[in-house]
Amino acid sequence: MLHDFFSLELPLPGWRSLARPVYRWLAWKLTTADHLVCNSSFTRGRAQAWLRPCPPATVTPLGVAQPSPPEDLPVGCPDRFLLLLPCWPRHKNIEAVVEALRLTGIPLVLAGECPEEFRRHVQTLAGDSPLHWTGRVSESELSSLYSKCTGYVFPSLHEGFGLTVLEAMSYGAAVAVSDLAPMNEVVNRAELRFDPENPEAIRQICRSLWESPQAEEWRSWSLARSRDYRWEVTANLTVEAYTAAVEPSPRFRK
Image 1 (cartoon, rainbow, N blue to C red):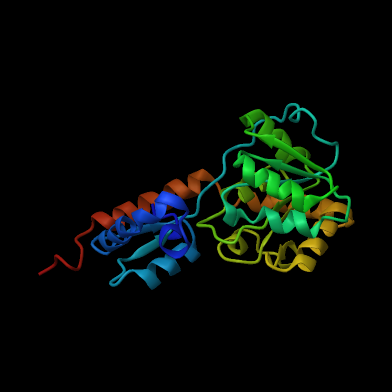
Image 2: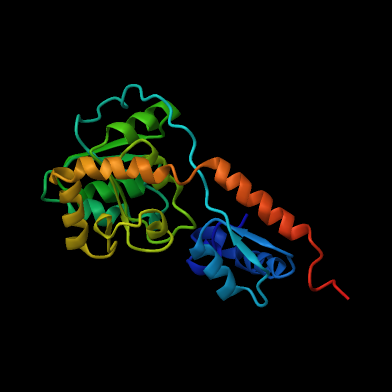
């Protein structure tokens, strides 16, 4: 399964930058494969751009499990909030949302772990805006955050798939995502996508999640759309891809 080309396309922090030759070697090794299984059309496109030659590639989207019953929210969470998850690494771009909503008064819950220095930086960007940091959350807390949030915002600048978006949708959360592939493959409604580098676009979509009369319809749509991504479908497509991979490869045919 090929997830993404993050390690080749984006700057790597710290010591990980020293591993760039290893990642390039791994990319070269992919050219010797008989078949690739990619989790999105976007990833397949990146494989075709990076790999010369590129083996045959099948798109096998990830699936989502049956939602768990929600329990109590993490301590201190407000009754109504927009959810940002995960907060780290930096390309998740939560700073853009925090800064765009600085004067709106809309409460944000930021879930997941991040470095303390980054947390302080984001808190400074927020000013007096209401932020609630949960840190690491349990599976039951995550279920509650997804099911009880007023909206889930995913401003990421780079993904291989974006599984947390699909998880939120499976709980019936109204979602807003970056208008970038592959997020726009899953969220295929234009009014639920935004330019992640445009503060005004971010502000408008967050206000829509917070106060639009369409919010209930968006929640129903999320739930219905998530049912298109079942693990049974993923399993069947994966078996088909493996079957194709064990067929005699053209490179070995006489």
